[in-house]
Image 1 (cartoon, rainbow, N blue to C red):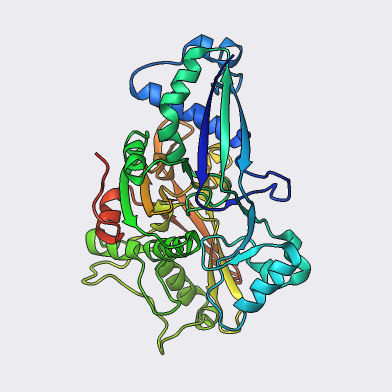
Image 2 (image 1 turned 30 degrees about the vertical axis):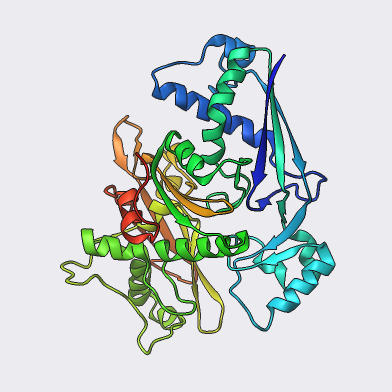
Length: 416
């Protein structure tokens, strides 16, 4: 039996579905499939295939997935701290009470203004604190790999430094949660490790020595401005909107939703909450044609719905679904979610912003006649009684690393 061990430092909490368990940390069931794919992609990039003797049972699984023949154990070390995490904005009135209540009820620290929305509804109800999925932070973990095949262990030893920085783990992993690195490895070494990762199209770096809580909040604000803009503490337009208006004369889906409401449900449109005397329906400067709306936010990750706040503080929901779900013949080609191709990786000294290739399936699919077809997404607006939906496509032309370099405030692309 051959083995190799790595000691990993944990930089940010891991939002864990089994957070209540003793020793809740990285799961082997998440690490191994990711590492297997990473190794296979690395071999593919060099024109190599996985030897049969490296596979479990010396063959591909029935579902077409290759499982490499090794086992691993993961043990946390150091002290454990739990966190209750929300996307709630700062509140001078409520935050002190929230912190006190959460410490008393579930022995956790409170972090707000992050990109984790799932537990917001539980934060202010002490009776529901037990439902909060806590973020778990240890000093780090020790991960040990075992195999009867020496070549497999040697390969893991060579690729693991690049693998561990190419992934975050747990829930909301692209937004800075679940970050680990090999202990004592410098940011300069991590940058070199990232350059070896397959599928990475851009690496951007910002020096930041603040506590990880502040880094997670900075990530949330930064990503929010890139994708949807900002309304809290000052209005700022989405950088994605600015990009497509200035370079492609393409309007985004939010404008289309408002125009659709205004034309088909004016009473509902007038009930939208707004801060200016006239509700904004922004258009591109020097606009030539107002009909070219597209679903541009999908390029930074698919979502299931849009929400607008009404003047009575209720929320108007707009459900977004691949239009193929409504097709009798092509429903099997439908997609529900894509993770964001933008990932934030946090260390003690830095924030890295990493871009990856955008999955082409977001634009097209192969239809029933084995021909490529454009994918459309259906927007369905709650509260409407007629003409309640419309469909939009996703732009095919988009230079994500170029966009980040221009609008991202993270400097030059360090990918070589």
